[in-house]
Length: 428
Image 1 (cartoon, rainbow, N blue to C red):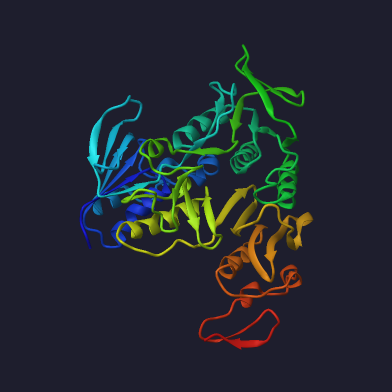
Image 2: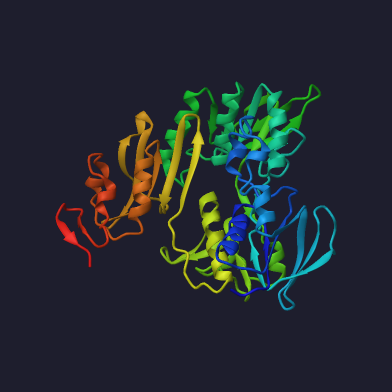
């Protein structure tokens, strides 16, 4: 296995997975991970749930234990940011976070950019009690304000907004959610799931204002925040949480001449437009051979799998990353999961009962299931994760029938299996 220095820029799960992937593949050279936060790589999903509720502490968030980096000889440069990439010379300029331009140089033989995303900010929506959660420091500040709050306003009914709303309700807070769309998750999960999730939140006492955006926030003399919406709503609260999407951190890559367009562009192996430079995680807009286009996916599971995969590419591997996407979101006692890809829009095939908040909505195309989104039906999601990568035939009627075991629809290699029509067949 060749030696040299592999540098990873980004202290999230993709960067940590790449560091482990390099060592697991037998790389014996230097591995340096540069992170702009002062914390070793950690898991973000608990920040809006267990960590925010005080059930998980910071020392329980780490992707790896502190000793793993020492034992695997992975150097952590934390609280540092890359200000320049010199692809011709194969080196980075690194400075302490918060400092201006300049700093020390760091040569590399291979470079992985896993710089992630940052929250999209709304003009004029800011203040001491206005939070745009992303990092553990953001979540810690929000947790402190939330502990003393009675009334919480959430701007945006996406995953972050809905998870924070559910956590706040669990802490006994009165929560109002403003969502500009009349049906949340319309584009990502479809209106059926969006309506079901809003119904869940309303059943837990959340005041959901659909079709209303927040126009202005202003701190009052009494220490509260006055919120004004486009629908004319005016109310006071103690905390405002904004979750309206994210922007990929591509500026340094773009300045270096690396191809970017809503993310850092890569091929199916994670290679960018410049030799010896790779990208993975939320910032990567990677070509996906299964779907025939470049996609940027902000999913924890995808980031971890991409990071490990691109590590092998950095060491000369030539395999394409073609795994189906999967994600989950915990809200109250319910879990939302999705696997595969949901077209926009799609006419779902429904299994289960949306009124009972236990159902799956399948995307179906010409005899194949291409994706699923589920509320409290994890078995369906697990089965679809297997189906979308296997040859299979299924009818809309079979998908809708709970008596049909989905995992039996995929042929078993080397043995007889049932087709969608129920006949025995043998794969050779």
